[in-house]
Image 1: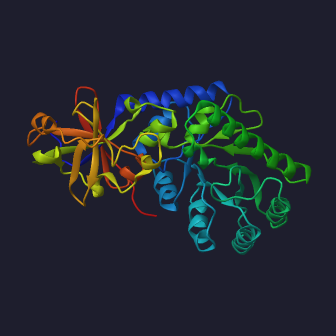
Image 2 (image 1 turned 90 degrees about the horizontal axis):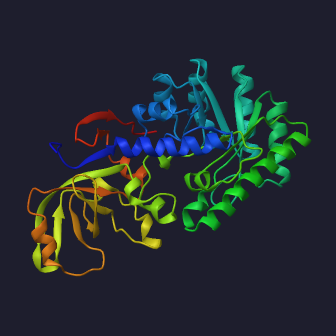
Image 3 (image 1 turned 180 degrees about the horizontal axis):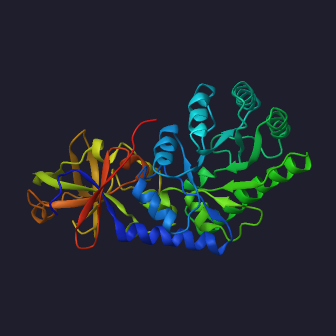
Length: 374
């Protein structure tokens, strides 16, 4: 494979399979899929999701919203609670024609949106974030504050588009039963929040939920209008440990080359360190610790027992996961050997690169640019 290393590779066949799987599952449950493009930050990837049936996109930065809108994606949900000093930037995007939806989870944030809307004569589209699992942000579905936020928005001239939640604690699970239970909890609590708003006279047409594990585990989605998921497009080793994919489904890898050996330690040294893989060690607390990544041959076939066990800035140490000093490992991978490393966290590893090389099974590759920054 004549690609300079290290490089971020997308296995197009695996990616397309992942897209088809998620789209088919959610279509069968009667909901829209609004993919979270923060994983890829890549126009070509998002177009493949759109072509498969996805509706709109989810972003986590205004940079993503701006770049994707410029590429023709007009229906954008900014799924991070809006900071007041970013409202002017959001307003500029809306005035260019972007159907941008904002997110709040407090009265103070709602008041800031309303104040900006009145000053600019702009009717913002806003969703309220619901905390369905105690993982991160959001208002409790039974909290009085939920209704207060809705009333502030409605009375101030904003449109309450709906409620949104993200069951991020699903990343800590690893059994089908636990995932299904959390998926139902996520659904039920977000639907309950919508019901409370409607009962208070506040329109709430959309109920948006989603994380990759709960999206895959969901058995029914009554009351939900859309699901957001992101990492499913590539998957990664954390998702494999959660149990929603296998390592053979992981579509993102880092191409690296053998540059040295430590035979007495059973180490193979490669040119992909933590700058290439990221410092994410998400599998460290899971049932299988893959170090900085799992090792595959140049075709993407996993090599049993080998991981990147250590990393410096530009050096990676490939060795056996069980710690055995196997000199045979060194003999199998001479200087110049190309390997692929599967990442712990696709979002973090992708973020190390300005572009991907999208490859087909025959090894042909094309460059797909990737966004960076905020």
